[in-house]
Amino acid sequence: MGDVLAGIHATWEFDTDSVLIRYERGIRTPRLLQSLRERRVPHTALSSVTLTPGKRGTVVLRAVPRPGADPLVEAAAGQLKDGCDPYRLVLPAGRETLAEYYADELRACLGPDAGEPADRFLVAAPEAPMQFKAYDGRAGFDGERISFRWFWTGASSEKWKAGDQTFPVTDLCGVEWRSPEGLEGYLRLLPRGSECLAPGPDTLAGPVPSGIGTGTAQSVHPVIPRPARADQDPAAVIFGLGYGPVHESLPFAAAVLESVRRKQSVPPAATALTTTARRDPADIAERIHHLGELHRAGLVTDEEFSAKKAQLLAEL
Image: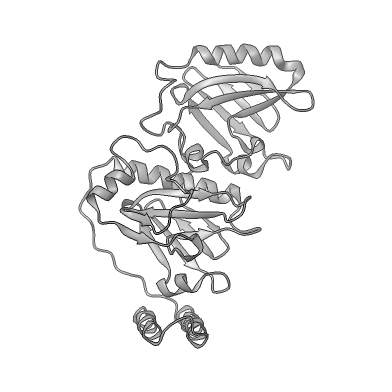
């Protein structure tokens, strides 16, 4: 097609095999869309196209992605508000006829598998490296490993006992993201073979392709218990007001999820030996001081205090 359709907050450029969506950088544009900047969506990643009336004299053109085609949508798991939906293009009602034309043109480009879930991600995930500040720690992702470094002002005693965490992507089977705009938001990694100690509404982000996911992981790896609450789980960071906003934490979750799926589809290579980098002595001293406070408060036993202190001193 090769045409451009400009709407509110975004512009769609129609190519022969895809739609290039560019998001505006204005102050009225949702921060998630600003952070995404642009996305190329192949026609093969779409299941349908709709055109519906919008609010205040507008119409909404929406491309509906196939289940399993977009890691961002899979990680969001239906929690995004309409204004943050990267597949919506809002236009003035006067452009309805033009929007209907492009909707018909785009529908004609949908592939024969449009009604089926995708067996792999077809839309590119946000690129690593990336990081964001959660309520109880700082999360980082370099493309191969996810790291959680705890804040002494926010992390629970369980996380302090466990210490800072690093998770190779190859050791994970998925990720859970609960929007920070609601109560009890968090980003939670799912190690292979992990199992929650108490049932809850949480599920693996997105549908799992055949041969990939919790079932396969648990059949190969022993079941590893994990805390039911994210604030006690060393494989999770929790969100609070101003900590872990959607435009930072959701792209992070999508990038991790895409990397997990990609690694699972590649035959395992020989594992290289890694060495632990030496820690800053001032940081170690601060952690030992906080550990002592937990010990004096009765939150850490004598044995746990001695073992954790020895572990921290060994990192010097």
